[in-house]
Length: 94
Image (tube, rainbow, N blue to C red; front, side, top):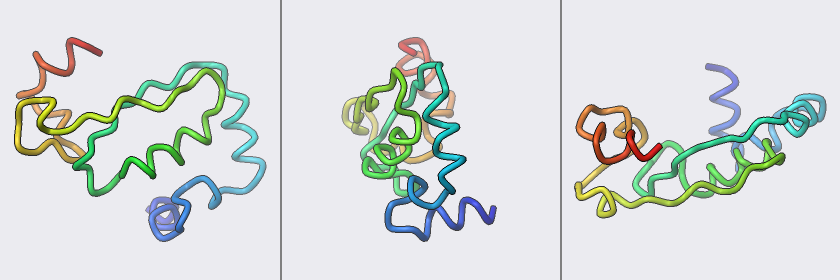
């Protein structure tokens, strides 16, 4: 929790909070990172997602930015993707 607190309180989220050694380790990771970004996510904004992806620079592109309207719903939010209502619409595509 203390790490998350540091990330959330820093203006650059997690990218500049971690020591150089940690950032270098992230940059050496050789597997693709797959993520989803929802425009109504109050905990991990589009800017925060970009900063997170900066840690994983190898073979990774920014994820698509999805709106709740794209999903045909009023709200998705931070944890909404894991709800069963998205099983057919989001999970199968990924």
